[in-house]
Length: 92
Image 1 (cartoon, rainbow, N blue to C red):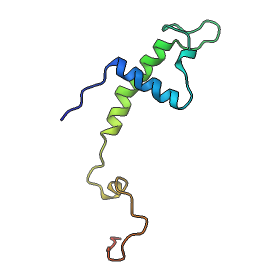
Image 2: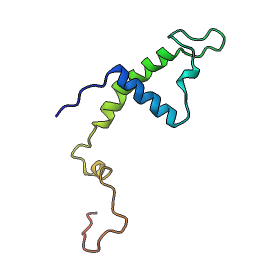
Image 3: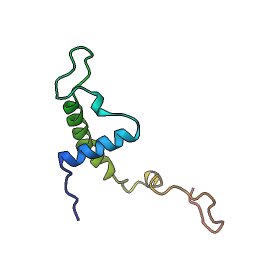
Image 4: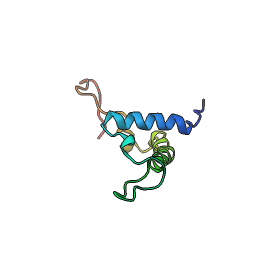
């Protein structure tokens, strides 16, 4: 089953919620896409567009990454048990 790409509105909600959870309020930025002439702060719309682009081009490819057949890297996907069984034979 293939997941569909989220819409801009869905990404905006997710981005705002994620930023709000760490104390960042995008409503403090000037409205629109033009930067504030006094402070140089980017416009809210341009920030959201940049974050949507980041989510689509970086997060999805990273989340679908899997380790190849290289056993040294594959162990990262399955961390060792805290107290392994004494019956388990370890490879050197």
